[in-house]
Amino acid sequence: MGDPKRQRKKYETPTHPWQKDRLIEELRLVGQYGLRNKRELWRFKTMLSEIRARARQLLAVSPEERQAQEKALIRRLYEMGILDENATLDDVLSLTVEDLLKRRLQTVVYELGIARTIHQARQMIVHRHITVNGRVVTSPSYIVKRSDVVALHPRSPFNKILKETQATLASPEASKGEE
Image 1 (cartoon, helix red, strand yellow):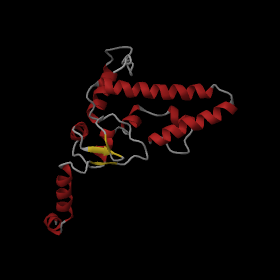
Image 2 (cartoon, one colour; image 1 turned 120 degrees about the horizontal axis):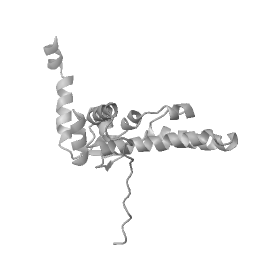
Image 3 (cartoon, helix red, strand yellow; image 1 turned 30 degrees about the vertical axis):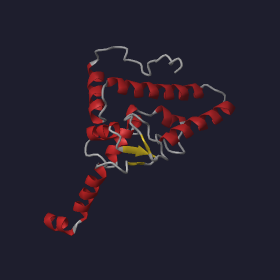
Image 4 (cartoon, one colour; image 1 turned 90 degrees about the vertical axis):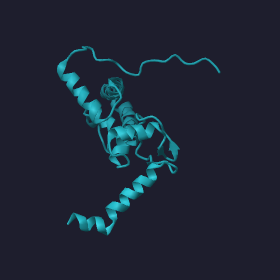
């Protein structure tokens, strides 16, 4: 079986535990994006701080070295779907944690209309009803790339429910009832 790697924390906790404004903001983000706990939020905040730190380091590098590394960083963030193709380091430095949270699989499933609520989106992912590029993904925190295709699993019972809902909305009787 081999030697398992030592598990390391992928997040940094806040320096001061009881700041009211930060606690309120964290609670709002946890509810809005359907996170399981604040650790998930802290993981994305740490990821953002690493990206921004890399951008600040590039500002101190000589212009010749900086250009290639800057393009690589921006290309990586573009493929993740966070920035536009012609972004600058200022755009990287102005990123927020919400920009990263919007690229989570759970949020994408909800925004595509596959799930009715953000919490149902999480449940559908964990229960193996969602595929990314034809493969089942069970991690709600999966970062959806720009090129990824998110869909329901072909054998998911939600396919039938979704088709019935779309047929009801598209039927002429439904539009007559609205008038």
